[in-house]
Every structure is written in structure tokens, then in C-alpha cells.
Length: 326
Ligand code: KG4
Ligand code: ZN
Image (tube, rainbow, N blue to C red; front, side, top):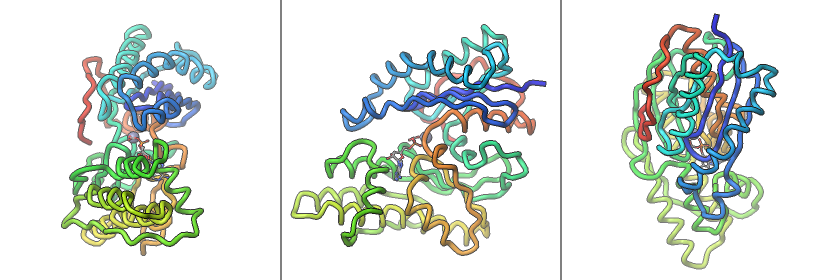
């Protein structure tokens, strides 16, 4: 029986490799490029591609060694095919296909957003994954709310402009903080004694999100006499409230208590505590080290789908799809 999976994630600025035995993660190595990109105030795709190419072979070697196995023990490869930066995705895909040919094992293309939606269940058997759930994806590239129905997802709404992570990063830049802004703003939010600046709460009809109004508000205020910490605090409260309102609305309308959260912003302390205080919620949150981009969620999704017979055939024909939908 096929057992060992080697997973590769290169969709943005993290080179991440993992090894799984069945559905169990046995090794995970991630090289974050943040130190390089923070100098530019954001991810430069060309620079990201070069760094992936430079470090990926070494990371594969270390991850395999750490698993106590060898490349020849691998039974399949799982790789992110989209969404993400096309050139960085292509690096992971090309290596995955090459390994598949050389080792004569199948390669499976995995959707990055779908993998975030399964990140709370890494290492768990399928029976622990709710069949019906509200799914909130909050990352640097995406803000979406969906309904999970078995192995399918129906989109309820998404952002009309910036994603929530992007808003965090842009606001941080306006206020002179380093990229990525989310963790810094969250930290200051918890440490400051300053009062939150009253900030606009966007609450669009139905399930769409918008963050450009809130970002412009911070930008305008920042040009005047302002208190940086009060502005950050007000921003975080409004940014998170918008997410909470949509989760509550979806739970009430669809009568679903299971809520799954995934993506980099799911590390946010206020989001976590506000979600936990929603009545009746059955919350599925990823562990902090699986909130950002990682190969563990890619390898887990491939392994669990293969184990449950949801995907059968590998696909050597796959190509990077930067705008892939869930
Ligand atoms: O999922 P992710 O690692 O990459 C994408 O797929 O986009 O998400 C990265 C985003 C960044 O915008 C970063 O600022 C945000 O997640 N982030 C946070 C926190 N930690 C990371 N935002 C708010 N609060 C945090 N604690
Ligand atoms: Zn992501």
C-alpha cells in the first residue's frame, strides 16, 4: 500500500517541505523569506523565485533526512498548484514532476486555499473533519467565506478589494512598520494601554468583505496628528469585527455550528478570542505553526483524500494556476 508522501509548497514567500507517513506528519521544514522581503516592504515575486530555487533542494534533503527515510522510500508527491505567484508555483511543480518521473511515483496537485481549510485537522483521521461547516479563509491573498459540504465547497462571499491580511500589511506600511504587518499590529494591540481610535466598521450586505475603506481611514488619519497605537488598535477591532459578523450571520442562516478557520490571519489573537465567545460555536482552528503557509497542510490534504478514495490518479499534466478557485 502507498504510504509515504513528500509535499512541496512554494506559492508565495515560504519554501516548505514535509514528509507524511499515511496521514501523519513526520517531518516539516520551512524556510521563510520574510527577512529578505521586509527590506522591500512586501513580496517581490522575482526575488521570491530566486530564493525558492536556491534553497528548495537543500530543504528537501533536510526534510527527508529528518523523517528518517530516503527519497526512494517516498510513494507519492503532493505539490501546491495554485493560487499563488505563478513563477514560484512553477518551481515547486517542476521539481515535483521531475521527482515523480525519476522515482516513478505519482504526483498530485493541491489547491492552496483548500489546504488552508484542512489545516486544523492535520494528523487527524477523516471522522474528525465535520461534513458540514462554515469555512473562513483569511490570508495575505484571500478573504473568503464558504460552506463545506462533504469534500466540496460553495463560496458565500469574498473580498471586493483587499484581503484582510493585505489590509494589515498595508496599514503597517502606512504606519512605518515592517512587512508582514499582521503579527506586529496584533502584538501592539495586546501590549498597548492606549484607547482604540473609533474606526469605521464595514458590513456589506450578504457575505462580501471590503477593507479599502478602513485602510483609507487609517491612511487619512495618519497624515494628521495621530497616536499610532490607538490607530492600530481601532484598525484591528474593525478588521476582526467584520469577519466575526459574517461568521455569525452564516451560522444563523445555515444553522451550522461547526466553523473552520484557515490562513495566516487565523493566528490573530483577537480573531481567536472573539470566535471562541460566539454562542454554540464548534470551532476548528489550526495550531499556530500551521496558520501560515506550510507543506504540512498540502501533504495532509493529499494523504487524507487518497485514503478516503476522493482522489485516485496522479497528474503529470498539471500546471501552475495563479488564480485557482477552491
Ligand atoms: O496564509 P499566509 O501565510 O499567506 C498567504 O497565503 O497569503 O498569510 C499571510 C498573512 C499576512 O498578510 C500577515 O500579515 C497575516 O497573514 N498575519 C496576521 C497575523 N499573523 C500573520 N494578521 C493578523 N494577525 C496576526 N497575528
Ligand atoms: Zn496561504
